[in-house]
Amino acid sequence: ALPVSDQTTDLRREAFESAFKSVLIKVSGSDEAQKSPAILKLAKSSSRYVKQFSYEARAGVDADGVAIKRLYLTVNFDQQLIEQLLRQNNFPIWGRERPSSLLIINSDSVEGLQIVTGDSAPKMVELLEAAGLKMGVPTLFPLMDLEDISQVDVSDVTLRHFKEINNMAARYWPDALVVGEIVELDLDRWQGAWEVRFADQVFKWQFNAVNQKAIIDELIAHLAGVLALEYALEFQQGKQQELRLKVSSVKDINHLISVQKYLGSLNVVESVRVSL
Image 1 (cartoon, rainbow, N blue to C red):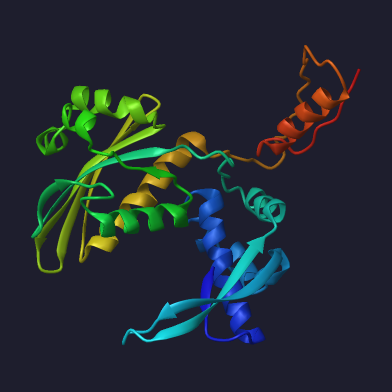
Image 2 (image 1 turned 30 degrees about the horizontal axis):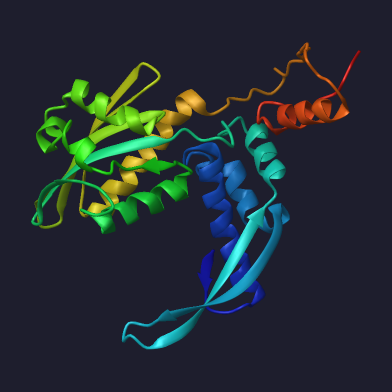
């Protein structure tokens, strides 16, 4: 839902364009698609990709704490048209089932050194979850309850003691493990140092920025990019294939319909038909 000041057509078109660019990032797993000249031209006519939209007034407060009503615009895009657009321009597509990432992060700031959880650093978790929602990356955070504390502390994260970290992470069943720290170096200077492990692959990088939010946004954007290398589906024009599958133990028509629906729901599948 996007905050808007009114329901005028011009403002709605601007909101559609902004939402269109956001959904391209979420579906493709990176911001490269929205930089494409061919796709940027289509952003001006993004309403053609809108399936439905609605307005909603929500209660809120202004800067002075006075109760007000804020107007929000919710936009739903046609998933098939968006995926078709990305395929036509040779961009990858994330599957509907996204890999989950467990974030084990040390935060080193004026507030002290601590592992980020919903209890220890709620504002940071809120920023991480918002960035994850924007990029379509599901995020998990350790509870750091007695079970976790008995296996991992901040020094293990700093020194990358992955034997201990992996033992602790096993209870969360993540697809990817993100270990790192966000450090406040001085005024307007922050640093993030990261190591991401999944599918027997390891990615490491560092990044400096002027504030904590910029560090977090960069982390999630880069994380989405490396996950997309493994999980997003590449598409090449002219390289479509037809595959015949033999399905056993189909007892009745309802089972057959269920199989067809499942296969049709996969992003890599364009169409499904039954042959005898």
